[in-house]
Image (cartoon, rainbow, N blue to C red; front, side, top):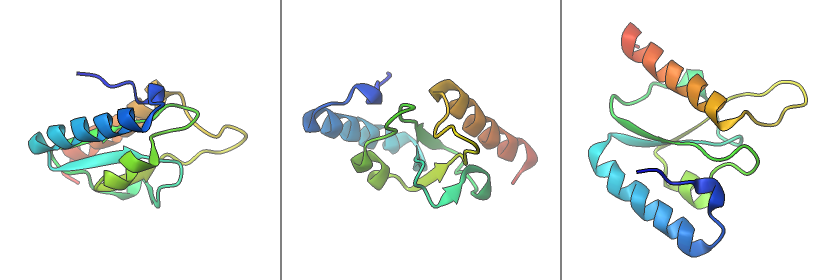
Length: 106
């Protein structure tokens, strides 16, 4: 099941995405969200063995209501003029870090 959070325009759709994320949390240890405003850089945290990771779109990111529901919010620091990464690049960076931690036992 996939939700295109970048298409969330109405509060009703935001509530639906939050409800869906809540249902999925029954199978995970934590909800990880991404945000340019997050306090933690993605490499500074230890990820739970079972996690649900939500990514927002390049321009606006995740809705604040969803970030607020997360157990942990992380950011990928940017340098230069770019303010965000392409969604697939951001997902690759973060998922690689999660895999690296699992393989190294961090």
